[in-house]
Length: 524
Image 1 (cartoon, rainbow, N blue to C red):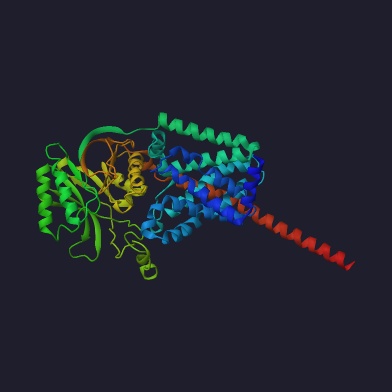
Image 2 (image 1 turned 90 degrees about the vertical axis):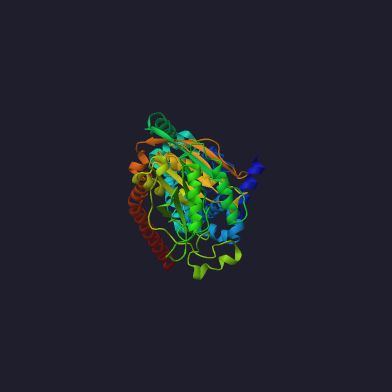
């Protein structure tokens, strides 16, 4: 045992060994997400990383531990992008990993050495708050969006989904990091077990209270929808034909809305009357409106859009939503004049897609005017978009997606899991429809509805989706967990900043006095 401990200390004493440990520690939480979906691991996975940053000899070394751990986390959570971005994913992971450098320094500042009860108690608030600031910054769409937020690993845990209805995915991340911090304190600082145990009890009691007494949505009937997943079909025309055949199989089953996946139609309906007529005839045959997704050029507008389009028995209803938040490198290249070379080393977008300007609600005539809020692709990762749709009056959220490029990876399962969180946050059911899987539907509490359509299937499935009334606390109050974290860090900076400045000046004065004494001794 002592030999193993000695070997470990020796490895950490080496810059290369410590760097490798930081990358591995940062990558560990990725196992809590689908496909492994070891959700319980999220509550302990940060402990090695925290202990590593705490043990750093200097703040600079702790910041480096944070950076390398962040790079490891981003690489692990997004590893399925490797076939598309190749070596560029290493560059992106390194750049985004820098966001964790201040967090690593914060961990050391609060937990290094033998901190007292007050400092450990502060760490239970400030370390999770610092983590939340990292998640907030990297959630900016131009930095890749909020894919892999730590709280999103709890998509299948009912008590966690209840917490999400109160404070969104941000509250889940805050609680998870707080639990990890308390456990790290228990491991490394046994004398500070009182605040650590108190922190764990607060998290447990708070979660239990939310599960028992938090408000829940009221039932408001149901709607029957069909989800069409063509499966792996080569060629746009073959995919459309397959989608038509699967949709016709829904005739006579009482569906009120049929949802196709992202890029399910390859040309704008206003520029292709023949395609519009085909889809209108399909709507009449099934007796339900179709929500398709068009990847093409709009009449009279430059560039290519990805658009959700509602089609009824008489053609397009006039309701269209153009995707607003695009996938960096997948749908556009930031600073193409500088980074355009990415198209030569991976599958980056050869032409930038155009952005929509506003979110849209679509009343579905075949579903008694049910208002549907569409999202396209990774927009389902943004909690603010689904929240805004519900504030505008959406009764059903729909995400149209395609992860066919990453069919054999963790991406399809990760993407489908986000719908459960958005449903729980907003008290509105959500359907996630894809071309090749995973397609899934979730009720207003984030509970699964029916069976998922996996990546191995091409099928049309019918779901009786429960509807709900009421406004969730998260929809009403918004991102209060984020604001609370900002306030906590701001207060700490205000209180600690002057003290640090005074300490520095005192150290300089002491150093000057020592220099003077040494000089006098030399003169004597």
